[in-house]
Figure 1: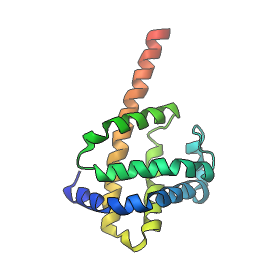
Figure 2: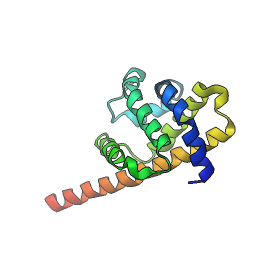
Figure 3: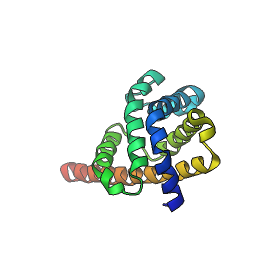
Length: 156
C-alpha cells in the first residue's frame, strides 16, 4: 500500500473512532434506503433493514478503526480477520458484495466527515478499503474452498 495512504489513514483514525458508529449507521442507511437495489446483498444475513444494520454498526465501526490504527502492521489484526472472515462465510458473504459496501461506506464517510473528507483523504480511504476487502475476499475464498474440500471428502 502507498506510504502516503498509510499516513493519511492513520492520521484520520482518531476521527474515525469518534465518528465511527455515525459513519457505519449512515452506511447502512445508504445501503438500504438510498440504494434499494443493494438490499439483495443482505438477503442471506441477519440484516434485513436499517434498524438491524444499526446493531451491526458498532461492530463495523470498531473494525474500521482497528484497521485504520494498524494499517501499517496488519499482522496484529490476524485473529480479528479470521473471526470476521468465518462470520462472513457463515452468512454467505461473497466477493461481489465488497465493492457495494465499499461504495456505501465511502459515501457515508464523506457525508459524516464533511469538509474533512478532502479528495486526498477519500482517495486514501478508497485504497485502504480496497486493500482490506482484498484481505477478506482472499481469506474467505480459502475458507469456502476448505469447506468444499471437507464436503467432498465426506460425501465423495
